[in-house]
Image (cartoon, rainbow, N blue to C red; front, side, top):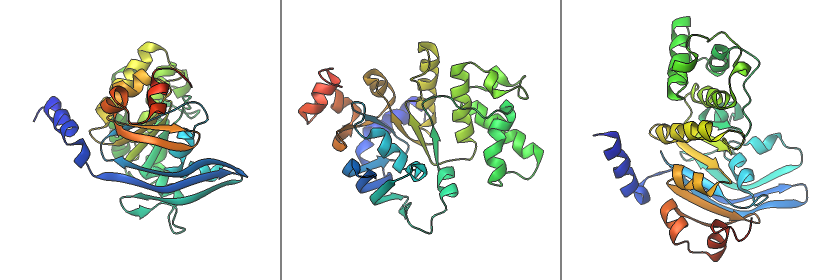
Length: 268
């Protein structure tokens, strides 16, 4: 079956696609301030889910609950339940390092390590013991850079610093770094906000290609980007999940007036 046919089949069956992650009654507190209020949101497998809403609405907070990045914030408290393939990711027995290998993250600003391009990719597989021989690592590095659409641009400069790349290339390097440990889910927190339009287009094309193999959740302030890259969209407002549905429906006939007003630019 062609890629176009596969994509069409995925879209037609979107409502029957199984859930990869399930969030139930998710609340987050920063000290006394409550940032999320009993959010129930399920993430479908091999689907791009966009989280939209005005600044401070809780979308990035929710994103960080999906791989426990909020654990690193002092006075942050979580309640509720989130499962990844039926595993409760907040169970005390869960290895957080292993969780973050399964649920990778790409941040708003490109943050390559101060190492070579090769070592940026090799770092994760090495600490997780994913390769025994240099030939194995070479294959992982090449495959990851290929998946990130970067291999042809950097294959002759693998031992040059990753920080020497352009902003768009650095962001794709960070995506390649996330892909290198074979995650199941990739979280993206406004991955294009620091990029120019050409670099943004390349990252969006990459997101489109990656969903064949990965489940992706992206926070974006760009309504156009959400419409272009996602199949599902969730709208947040004041720490609450307003609604979640197929992206086409959300942008043409949302159920909640707040979603309509936000998409039309009436607030936010």
